Length: 83
Image: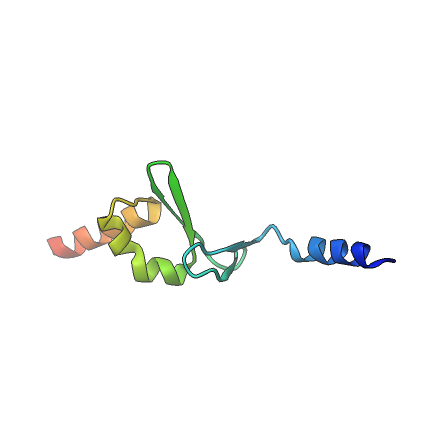
C-alpha cells in the first residue's frame, strides 16, 4: 500500500456524515448526539451548535435572522411576559 492509498483511506474514515461543523465556533457537532440549529436570513443560512445558539440567538434575531428554534424561544419569552 502506498502513501496516497493510506491518505485516501484515512480521509474516508474521517468523513463521518453525522459530524458537521458549527459555523460560529468551528467545533464539531455530532448530529446523532447533539442538536443543530439552523438560522436563516433571506438566502443566507447558518448552522450552529447548542452553545452558540444559546449565547447568540437573541442578538441574531434582532438582526433579522430567523429559524424554528428562534421562533420557539421568542414564543416562550412572549408567554413569560404575559404572565
